[in-house]
Length: 289
Length: 333
Image 1 (cartoon, rainbow over the protein chains, first blue to last red):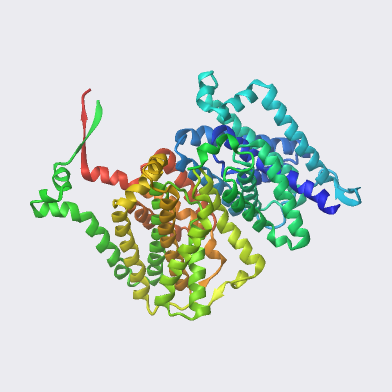
Image 2 (tube, rainbow over the protein chains, first blue to last red):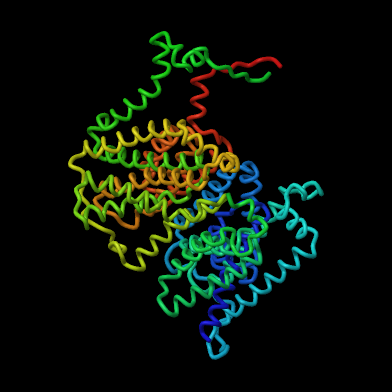
């Protein structure tokens, strides 16, 4: 029972973390290697608003943190990536460099040790199926499911969402129909960064805000996306459930140290057996040599 | 008005080997190369009285090798390697294993570690080689982080303390000249290699892999060759660093080894190979001067790197080459 409950929680955590990455990649074809940095930055900003500047109420601090992260993401595209669009090598290096600059800048600015902690939304715990689960984890599950539903409806019902899907499927055809490719890319980075920020404020109350968290988030997000198929949203959910349960199982039966090894093995097996991921059918021909 | 660029007459005449007629033309061709070689060889003697900076020269040349590997992979094979630290880590640990555990002398352990490390890196990177796109970048980004965790968690290879007691070089001159000669030798060897048949095919893999396949050449096989050569350079740098510090630990997987070579290539000028060296020669001393800033140095590299990518993507070397080979003038349109 414990396996099942914590497996589900862990899987939803993973999918929350990797949703932003896959959204940006599927729409703008930019691998956003600054994803982990935006995650940590948003947690840190929320902490700042909560504790340093006048002590905003928690809800407002979260809102501001997420909005500023999303603006940072949009700015990254608007001022840097737009100039090197289409040059794959430069895109990868630039996002990686920006991410490192944010993370190491925060480390230099004093983001280390256990002083940076976000409080849980509600303390206490409840017993589900005989396993005690604290409220924060329940909120994560609820918010994760809600985010999926909102994103699903957003991409199916609104005009911007449909434009997103159009660009993701065929950029040229979409441009011919009058969809502004740069505009959607800016929006996609803004939304992807906001998702990273949302994941941060939901997940960080479970632990400290540390720079290493940024690297971990990036590695897990990337692992989930590769296994699910880069740029495939359904794949993200399935893959995060696979990795999530595999991790909980190894933690339960072997040792917690092997969590990273599981992610790596999963990536390697996927690349060997089905290189474009579980749901990567659409781009399969493009990615195979 | 617009700027017009015209090749210098000297360049046109010296392009074909038979057209060289005077000492001046030979100097025009050989000058920059000799300047680089003699300058680099003289560097330890210039800093004879500053032992600290002699150490910096060693590190500088090790980074130059890594930058060379990155430049080759990115601009000739078309694979972006975000984790150069993986190569140094593997090379360093192999050197330590051969030297400490097996007990081989230094002149055997370094080359053996280079080759064994390169084979290991190539095999581990093999799954993502048949794929296009960002897979290689993703996997190379993950490996240094993962190997650090694995070594920490399983407490193998000395765990967090690392492996101590790696044999040092006999004296400071050997230390200096081993790496300087290796860096120069690899630079010129690589410059020659990319213009050989194999290098040509590699460039074709980067530009248009379908045409390579259509010619009956396996893309994956060519990429394996490319990755093997790059990891050869990287593992050599790692093995050298392990012997230099007489220690192999998880700091060989540190971020510096990944980001400085990338920054060096972008600043020096991608695709020129010499540019990688020049970028390393600028960045590593800079990083020594900024040592007091700690991790803020990485922020500085990243800002310089992004600035160069966005505003001056050709890099220093291509700029210099243009000034050397061409003259510019304003013409009326």
